[in-house]
Image 1 (cartoon, helix red, strand yellow):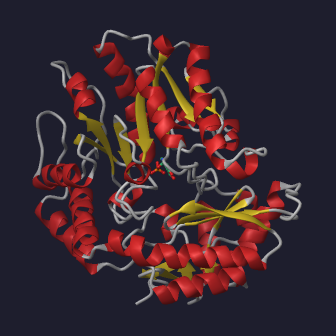
Image 2 (cartoon, protein in one colour):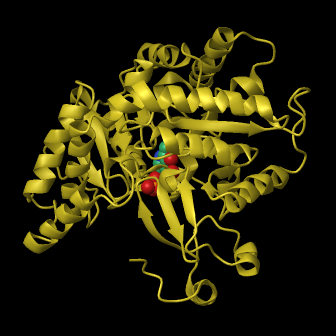
Image 3 (cartoon, protein in one colour):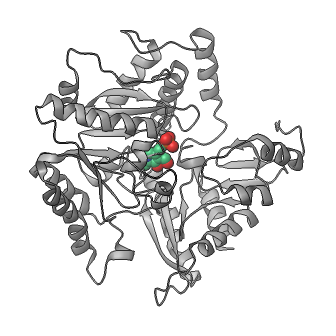
Length: 445
Ligand code: PLP
């Protein structure tokens, strides 16, 4: 049953009248009308005209177990019946909140055993920024306040998360972002490799962190913050030696390492987390999106034992949200993780989906002179568009590439996203072999 009791034109008029959209060009929205999505099942969506669309973006990088899972809706309904809300403030808890934290300690790496809940990746990262500073206060080093992120890193939309991110366009909005955030080069080999081998570039890019720390002074730097594979900045996966070198530098200068696993977490790279993929051990990790497969808003921060010990002091931890650990969100997230485990979805991603997806993308790039490279890991890919790939000539106007992407998405019943000159792809983890073929045919068209 499609919940579309109005025509597309009626929806569009109502939307234009009253709805303010995030991350949208409102002028173009008014001119072209919004796309109204009314139903999802597995890896597909249906719009208000009844068109079936393959969702190459898993919503916003989040619907890992696919749409239409009745087991998740049943769990949500049962929890709403039993206890729709109770908070985690003031020495209280409820079974889903407790069970989810225990489940998270089972699936996250061994050294991460303590979890704080929020509602979104932005809120979680905003909280982490406070916790990093609290940690160093507790360690008697309150001057270690500066946090280093990367150009084209994305950590969210609050003022602190935007300050930490390296997205130029976001910083134009409102301006005057917070002090004590610094950024280093993103490890984008195709764009910045300049004749180096990948290995040389991996070290070069990681060593930018050491240079930045020395420039600021290690006694003032609290943490380095990074996505294992940068997602919203254009799917930038670093050379294999990059992350181990970053870890070494953080240890050498006594700086916390934070992995923002909001996209990479819960199977995206064919491992439970990006840190498993790259073999590193962050002190703090951020989870959201795939934590509930987007069925309910929830995020979680994972702390290593050392960080938790420092935060677990006798005063009030004066930070939290009314919906921190919302019982319905926790119940759904718990069931979502059980589905990933019981159906061995991540194993299947690694053994079947990833080889077919990556092999197919490689051949796709051979068919098109505007594809500069296909990068990424697991079921996360960036297709770099160039005016002339052979001579490495970029599109002059960023919009040009973006328009090509939008055209393809609309014309061929496939959702991909344009990020500057890159088309990013992040299908549900449950994408089947025939849907991978469908994706490749539509992307090729
Ligand atoms: N961190 C990363 C790596 C993200 O990709 C995102 C969102 O795309 C966020 C944080 C922010 O999460 P949210 O949109 O849930 O606030």
